[in-house]
Image 1 (cartoon, rainbow, N blue to C red):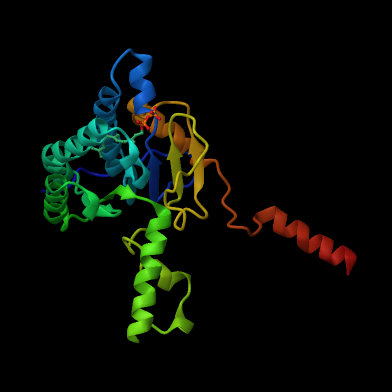
Image 2: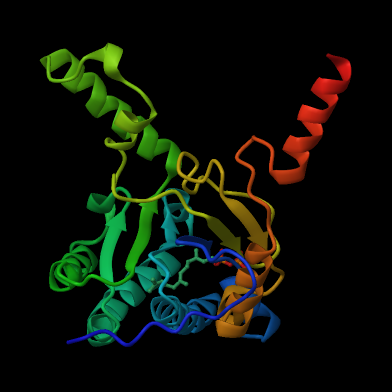
Length: 260
Ligand code: FPP
């Protein structure tokens, strides 16, 4: 199936290649409406669907969604069970749309912790979409950045012990190769919904230079117009990566001259 044509909005500035989202506020959204928390998660799935399709259509390279953190296992068993079921159902229902939009699914995290039926549905969708060459949709599941780094270091230490890795050769890029999905590019933009100002153990290595955008909108209300607000904010950011830009650089050379 050939993917839909790319339709990227011109927002007057750079467009992010990799967007990562901390989807927060499902519970609050439901409580504010006198509903059960799990109904907030169900409404959150509609946002996942809409944002995935919108990003694919706009030609985003990668979209990473923080769908279930390593810490989320501490929630009441009923809620965990419901989330795992939602995941399974979503995988089955969305395969057709993912194929239509040319989206490739990848999952990151301690996936062996997931219930077998959910893992099976995820793996089947990963396999089905593996040949797609459009956007990569990464779901972070049972994911924690600290455990990602610790797991990677453990494998590195083993390889060093086995003699297949020279400890002296270890650098930032070789460590990246030991993360859950070495192909994960650094996110350009991390969006967090529901007004929380934390990274919550999400992509700590990869997001070192990401631009962060926080909105007070809860995830079930985060749809295409809210995505466009985030993209507009990103288009107006000046990314310096610790260096200086344009006229600021000229400023420094002038003062060097003045003091020389
Ligand atoms: C945070 O809201 C959201 C989650 C822990 C789970 C996110 C899950 C979904 C959007 C649905 C399932 C996902 C897929 C990919 C099918 P919260 O419960 O922490 O909200 P609160 O802070 O208001 O309580």
